[in-house]
Length: 354
Figure: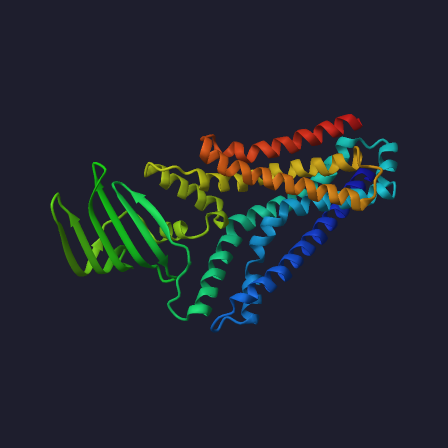
């Protein structure tokens, strides 16, 4: 009975601190981003629309700040109990360090479940809707779904896409077809429309390259034979980082089927799937600061070191991501390496504490 009460008390303190930190981080980010985005006011996209757009993106920002929010929240929650000697009393009463850590991990499990649900079901849709809504406000009806273009390979063909609209219309499409590493045909179309489960090109120009001459054909419409669907093109032109884990895995499999590297989608996939391990390792670091070498310092100092640790963790992950592409090692290690480093540091400091 007493153990259950202590578990709830520790969980309430830690979870409350995490919520406060997350709200402060999101609020600060909202204010700074709002001031910065006021320079994008255009057409019907005014100051109020800027605020609505940023509010639509809150789920994605919540996901991004979740690890550092957990780290700082755990530091503050445990630190406040350490400053009032509550943790000392608990340990003097026979409560082990492992049991205290398990009490801290219980609310973290809830946070992890919320983050995973947001990453899979909420933030990809709100990000896509917010982007389409913003561009529609700025450009009017028929706005493109994304301002990012993209390249894609399919068999012996390479495609360049200008943009895709919310109604699954591709704008400014170019196809380059090769045979034995020699360019044989270039096809450009003003747009491609998805009709009756197939793509139809409009305003098409086909240039065929022969040994001594070129031949040009023009068509009002032409069927585009491809295995790519509107969903696949949408994933291609959307920001990879904001896509759901299931979308990233499907995109990576598609790239591999085309004989291409899938390092980038796999990197973000493993970042999201290993998020529980990442948060657990950061909580271990936070606990080691409270019970270990920083147990006697002021709360502000512990928070400062927590922020520095979170920044180092993020920078190492951001560095290892591109490195996995350059040096050819698995993206999963780009995610696991800083996570295991944090976990090892936390275990080492806690072991020294006893």
